[in-house]
Image (cartoon, rainbow, N blue to C red; front, side, top):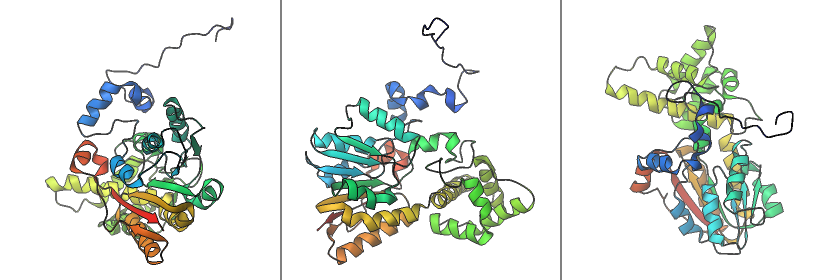
Length: 351
């Protein structure tokens, strides 16, 4: 607005050079839906367009849930809203969906995105809640006829350097799903002993080089160094593995070690195993009789917890049926979305 109250046209910020380097200047990352051609091109190459998330195993989930108009459902992990929107389609305007997310940044964007798609509050209720709070959510809004939880981190979180989820781009070592609460990863790492870091890496990501990485982290602190950014941690990991022979396999080993280390630290920072255990404990009472639940996991620790809980509920007669083996995405989906490769799906039906 100028002094006369007239709206002044604001030019978008320009960047230096032929390509934007700053995340805030990368328009497509913030509004990928406006660049359909670019998005389609990126997906065809087997990548996920920055700033958006491709939902995994949608067909398998819908085939199992068998959603019918008039039912009540819960998406425990809203994220980009891909799974939620597909489940809403199955309701055909009858019934109600509830969705949870702890991320205060992405939940606002997703709510707006789904509202524009025609899913307003008359059929969709979005709650800023951790799915560990399933007991209170179910007592107020349940029980639910169908439920799902996607335990993976959203691509939007990974792609934003300010969130500190990726070793590939410089950013603060944060890793919190809810940046408004909790302790950032940089501070958490400094609180741990060498034994605790090693245990975290083994338990949370089965890291084979846990001992070397833990020792190098503590050595860095003792020498007065710091590990405040994603690059700092990446450099420490690379230094810890200098004993590896210089060959073509080393690059791949470093990549996978970085991925596992960041995963282990993220799980610790967000208490992800404790959150999943709370969710699984509350699950039976949150489902209606005959209710169906599907859970997507992305590493062995999560899958073991889900497998064990489902088997116990089946034995106790709480569940009438569970998936005997994990269900994995097909080869075509994995080719189109590299982030689907580690996915495992398990399902259960309440008696």
